[in-house]
Image 1 (cartoon, helix red, strand yellow):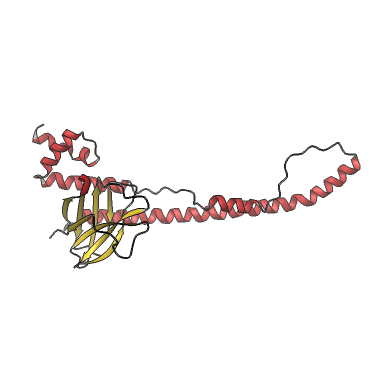
Image 2 (cartoon, one colour):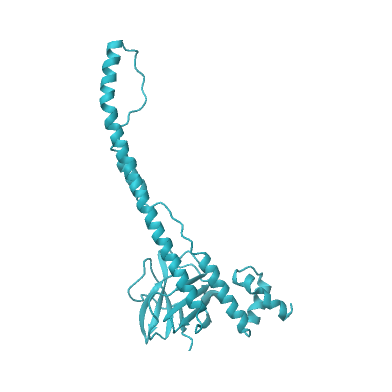
Length: 250
């Protein structure tokens, strides 16, 4: 394959659409081609931003909440009764007329509660979507900053880590490619290296092997980024040896 042809493979490489031979040739080429390396970073960041769309799943408590509310509604199974005389029919109709309003009120309370719950969940989903959009905009602004500087390093198991820093914005982005999934109940956590003192910079998505993450907080005087494996939800300080350490670009 000619060198000119390798320049056209940046998009396919960023989306992992090359076979093993093409990928090996492109990686050998990009090691000496800053333009291709930068374009791959930008394409991966754009793909990561497109993946920020939020999906909403029912809360785990939904079933128990609905089952709890159902207990307030009186229900009777179908039954057969002998044909009653007109007098008995009238008495039964009278008793039924007193029970129906109560049942209607109970049903209204149940569905009213469900409607309120759905409204709250919809507002939460909208808030999450707005936060994701803001984070996507901030991530893109770091990658597109005129003073953005990048550094890429090989990680374990063939993974690649790239850090992008904008001193003007005082923000950084970590881009992972081909990261192995963390163990069950664990998550990758990012850290700013403040002269040997690690400051939490947010969590990665344990369900994704390729991800661009806007690191939480300002760069300030940090000299690099570290990645550790932590319990789900993260830790206040590292509890394991780092799986990756990258110095920030000068």
